[in-house]
Length: 210
Image 1 (cartoon, one colour):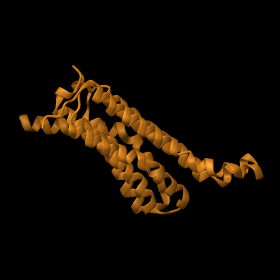
Image 2 (cartoon, rainbow, N blue to C red):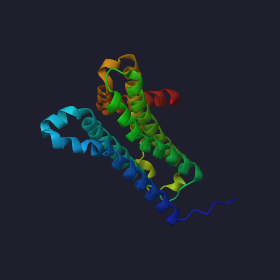
Image 3 (cartoon, rainbow, N blue to C red):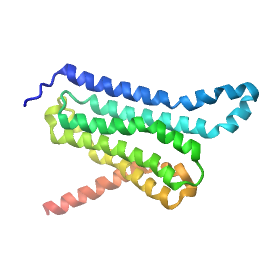
């Protein structure tokens, strides 16, 4: 059966994704809304001290979702058409995004040196990053889905770098749980890793043509 794809269909896909992200990022504040009444009986400083886990979790996850949305927005700005495969890959990405509030509450509630809990949070980020990379890979393999001239702007190695680093952070969080989510700081190595991957693939390419 032939599937009819229209520009309106692409708009619905993007709008649906934006709405799901908006709901997920809004849900992050609900744990703080539930405890807001506590401030009536204590100072603001004491409130922040008592709920620093929830506040920190909200701040980190707000930035995480925001960053993932920016990447999604940049990718879909290049798209002029879509496929069924792309829809399902986008659902995988959305599933990981809407899971972030739960993972955030899990980390905030339990915290401590729980490598398994941190692994849930970071592992979910791996899924989100990998899903977006697969979307870009699908677009590279099907350039007819892209706007004219957009193919050259997709760098799969650059997109793969944060996924690799998140996987490294996941393993380190399990092996060395005392560091916790601070292992996410390895993401600052994204540019050096990207340059290294470029160098390795260029060498491999030059050896293949020799």
